[in-house]
Amino acid sequence: MKWQDKYRDKLLTAKEAAGLITSGSDVIFAMMDQPKDIMTAVAERYNELENVTLTSHWVEDYPFLHPSKYPEMEKAFRIKDPMTLRTTREEVRNRKIDYQPTVFGLSNGERQECADRGRLYHFKDFFYFKLTPPDENGRCSFGPHPWYTPSVCRTAKVKVAEIDPNLAWVYGEYVNIDDIDYLVESPEVGRLGGSELLGQTPPPEEFEIAQVIGANAASLINDGNTLQIGVGTAAEAIRDFLGDKNDLGIDSEVIYSYTIDLVKRGVITGKKKNVDTGKVTCANLQLYGYNEPASIESLAYVRENPAFLFRDISTQCNVGRIASQDNIVAINNILGVDLLGQVVITHLGPTPITGPGGQVDYCIGAHYSRGGRSISMLKSTALDGKVSRIVPKFEAGTVIMIPMVYLDYLVTEYGIANCDCKSRRERAEAIISVAHPDFRDELRQAAKEMFYP
Image (cartoon, rainbow, N blue to C red):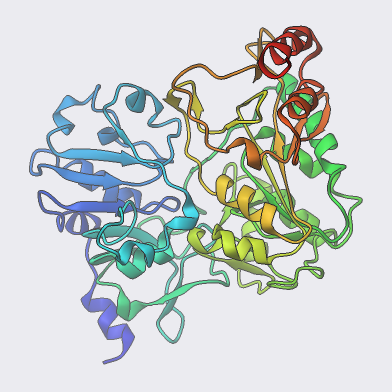
């Protein structure tokens, strides 16, 4: 039987696809390129279902994400959230949504084969996601935003794919149409994509400070280095200070339109990468608005371009694989640091505002890379300069995601602190040197009380 005949036999409407779910099911949706019509149809079944677990990174908004506003949804749906975003933060604080963070590098599906391992993403009853139309051999691409979709697709019991002709075919990971249980054809022909955003444009004054931080961090990058650049204002601000570098490589969770611009300009060549030489490797092309000219050009550039490999996030964030790449530089934002060098990246106090993603994996992997290093970028103050993000010690209940031994270079708008292998006193002195001047005296006094005889 030809794949074209099998294709026709698997077709459902979005409503029929949502109707497959039964009470008690464990369901996961793709992180990006979400099949919104199906997800909306799932929400509309709240009167028919009970105790259905829904998991995703909730980059789009749906009624079931707001049980405080729609209490009738609570009986039907239990929501799990591995990376709190703007759509879920309030309900996570209200304890209506179950925050379940994980690091991407441990979520490959193979580890989860063991019966005693948690299964946040894998071995679900139903998986809903998007694919490109099949090629002549019946093979589909996951597109330029695969995140966890390839590995989840390998382990889910029932796989339901929306075939979207607007999704760009890219090199990396693929699936045969024979391996998909049901198909839904996208009704939105001609639309470039969704409006999924992981970040927002910062106010001008914040971006100005971020550029100073970016310039400082760029001074730590050498020709031929391979970069991982995380999501966030300061980390992305480094882009404007890479133009005079040579033969940079990219091995990252995320790439951006400016990454592609640097490829076009010959700044990023990947020639010095000892793994995936000459390739840009990532798990997502981050676009801030699909209909922006830069986004349209970026999607066109990566389409069927063998210089870009898009892979499952668990592959990208595997610590051993990261460490095998020489001279890798992990560049990420942090929320705060204490004088021991303990780093907060996911919580404000005990309150979660995001997930660890791959930042922990890349930070650790970069430490074990030959010639590698990790750069933590921090705006020194918050609340219009009233509060220092560098503190003597964190309040009880603060979640430390990166331990003191893995703080390498700390970069603020006031300079660079090399914290590698320093004593507690030396570490505190280095960290204080890049704090806002208004807070340095009190930080020095606290350091004396904590670390000096």
